[in-house]
Structures are given as C-alpha cells and as structure tokens.
Length: 146
Image 1 (cartoon, rainbow, N blue to C red):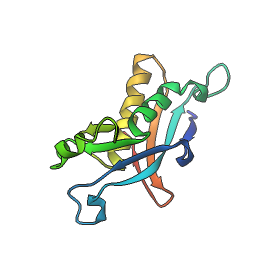
Image 2 (image 1 turned 90 degrees about the vertical axis):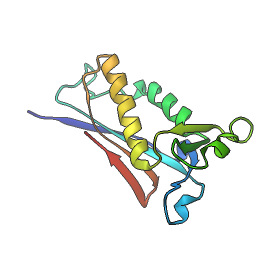
Image 3 (image 1 turned 30 degrees about the vertical axis):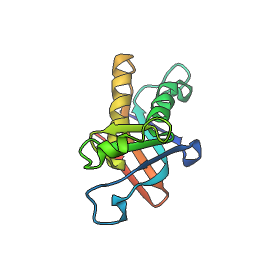
C-alpha cells in the first residue's frame, strides 16, 4: 500500500524564542541560554483528503497556538531544577516562566508530538504523525517518533 508523507516547517523566523538550561550539565549548557526554535512536523497517510492532501496545513492553528504559548518568549524551567523557586520568581514582568517535567529539545519534540497526537485523536483525524523535529539552529536538532 502506498503512503504519502508531508512535512510542515515552523522556522526559526517564527520567533519561538525561549530560554532554558540543562542544570545538570557540566558544560555551559548549565547556564541560561536561548534559541529561536524551529519545529518540523511529518505526517503520513495512505489516503488523501478530497483536496488530495494528507492534511490541510491551513488547519494547524491549534499547533501554532500551542507553540506560541510554550515557546514564544518563555523561560522554560525543569521541575527538578534546584534553582526552580528562584527562577519562578521571575514570572510576570521579567519572564513568562513555564515549568516542564524535563528540559531538552528531545523533550520539546516529544511534548509537541503528544500534543498533536491528542488533538488528532480527539478530533477523529486519521493521519499518522511520523515524527516531530525540534532544532535550536541548523547544527543541532532532536527528533521524536513512536
């Protein structure tokens, strides 16, 4: 059976600029640093819509809202970060602090994948999510797939 695959790219130019740190790292990654992240979503289906698409890219507003809420001018802090309380005090006028279970591009990719999967399931969208890739820049990226 044939399968069609499509990719939707939300580029670095979209402004998903967030800061975070890998508090357990021995490198400079233990310090707060930021990126304008990009997201690539790959979908597949053996069937096309009446418009001959795997998925209507114009229907990604739900994902744009999710990405903006979580990655646009946010300070992402791991729930187990020893400095969590101090960083959380910045929430409000200084930063938009979001506490997440874990911090890494791998986790951002998984989080986004699961969000899309839940949305598709709740809305009876019969399209497979192949993977989600999150990139800090052209040299570093992480991909999550099931």
